[in-house]
Image (cartoon, rainbow, N blue to C red; front, side, top):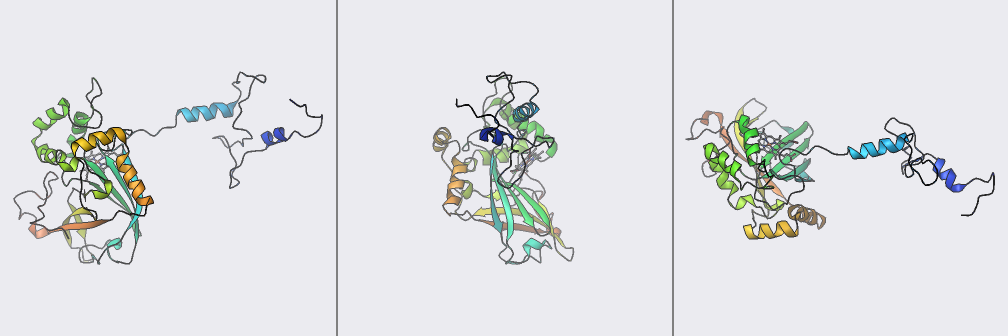
Length: 316
Ligand code: HEM
């Protein structure tokens, strides 16, 4: 090492003493706001250490790092979101006073998050499961969340059973198997004891359970909603998303192989498509039932385990 002549400013020393700023001139500080001059060397007892406990910045930085985690969601932990926009084809003034559904020239920004339900955050994309299809519309009048799934119905009629359903479908408690799927005894115990689930199981075990691409999935609001127009007239509606590319699935054999070769298959597909300018498009459709027709059907139109047959109530 060359020795610095005495009293001559040491450039490295000076850099170490200057407070750190980012490219916008913002100070680097501790969590308490104290400016920091060095965040790459801890205070040492002598040149070769050890690090000393007086270095409060070091202790805070490492403690903060050790706690950097967002609790995993209990369901829909694995998801992937993208930005886009929404436009109505024609004013829906007759049906609703919601401003974003009036003017075909208005582009409402949206954010859509696609997800699986059961698997943990790092699980494979191509598992057999329901897919979430959650859209947030950033409308002029505030945010409107349209939470949906890629199947038009749900497992249960009463929300109080949801914790029991999810506990049953999550991995077995004694061995934490299986990951991200429903093929195990606790789930089938649930199914045989809760007959309202039968309809959803048919959808889950159909081709819909393994979508080929998020761009090729339908979305359904599942619940029955009400739209109210400016005259106060209300109607029952169900929301549908129809992909312009059509609905496509993987075969079980393809899904299993892909899960091993590229667990990020669905998110990569969406990422690549958007980067290639192949923007996915979905059409928002509505089924509408007049309030006076509420009891005209041989099923309860508020029952989330039933569809409104499209031949009886067409999607517009
Ligand atoms: C039956 C009662 C239900 C309960 C108690 C329930 C509960 C939950 C919970 C706790 C989350 C995770 C929230 C978070 O940690 O951020 C969630 C997410 C989600 N749920 Fe449900 N859920 C129910 C029914 C449904 C239904 C019927 C649908 C379909 C319309 C649905 C679709 C979704 C979607 C898509 C997400 C993920 C949203 C996102 O991507 O951020 N859920 N649900």
